[in-house]
Image (cartoon, rainbow, N blue to C red; front, top):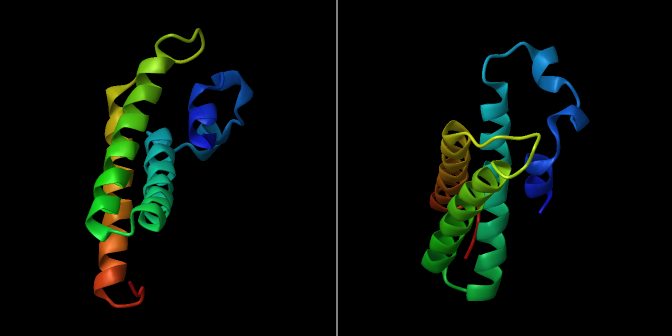
Length: 113
């Protein structure tokens, strides 16, 4: 929900972090990091309810990909934002990184069950 609010808020309402950072495409890093966190939270939450590891991966991937796509579509209907396919690709990259972290964490044995 927070990610959606931030992605749909008028750009003028956001702090000028991007311009202050002077990093090209910094917003893509923000998208990727947000969806990395979203995918981990979605995995943990669906794992709690489904009790099945494989299903929780699938659900968290689908939720993240669909949510990111919907945000980009909705942005086209606002006056202050526009959609960008590269933002969605950054969302998917962040989600994939989050899932990869979970898989690596589980394989290393630091997370049981």
